[in-house]
Length: 395
Image (cartoon, rainbow, N blue to C red; front, side):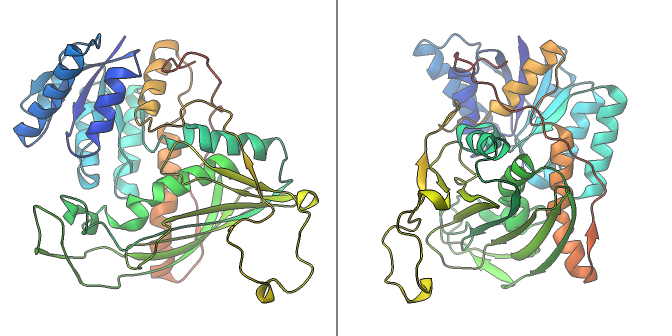
């Protein structure tokens, strides 16, 4: 049994607590820590409540400081759920104390920090990995299988976007989304880019154009209603990615636009098109279009035809063919812990995080230099998920 200490008990910790307590039985949460002691106590109380309901898990201890968790000889893995700009410090502390580390996305906020963390993990022969793990869910894994088996032919390209007007209207503590390490590309981009590299493979080069549309944001959610926060990061980013297989993907992320449908993800092939589900989720739906199945394909200018209520006429919904269609955050952690026990590779590994971070930060570098950005990191897709009949038990 791999023993885990959770550092950071903010909003995202709730789903980790639920899944580590009730789903992933091969991982044992033995401690929690937060800069705000009340949050750590709330996390401990949640587990206590689950124990009362019958959960067979230990009651996690509360660490006063993250250094205490890193120094605890009972801890095997540090689960780093702090804010993005804190990932580097907490992860480095854990690695230097000889702990494996799994962090929320991104690995770090720039490549210099990420390079150092990867170097330490390699030197100490430690497992380092992290979110997003949504690519391991039923949705993206089913799409990967369809692409790998040639259902859309050879991949030509992809078009993805994440469009919204920021988080200050609903998030209880949205300031950090506009600080270093925030912005739509580092916040939401990891879901889309991680899905892209798992479906299309290694990226080799990219271009980008980015900007900041608003100098400040006014929070309208509680408890910070009415507070005005400065915007320190670009909030409108567009880029193109060239993959080693020749495919080209376009990506657009923004916190500046009023829009109803946040996620858009399509992959185009020589024999069809695949509509991929929101990569911030683990499930579906998935739609596949092959022209021979479309009995009412276009016979005139599509722009002149009456509008369709169905946004994907001619597409067929594909059933999910893998497990974990519900919110399964912690799946990547459980997979890494299983890998620690068995010695196999782990799917949400630092090589993937490192490659994804270079893509995410490369758009701004390309924009600033008004040039083509050549990728330096290498990437090879990890093994696809297996259809294990026991939910919560990894191969």
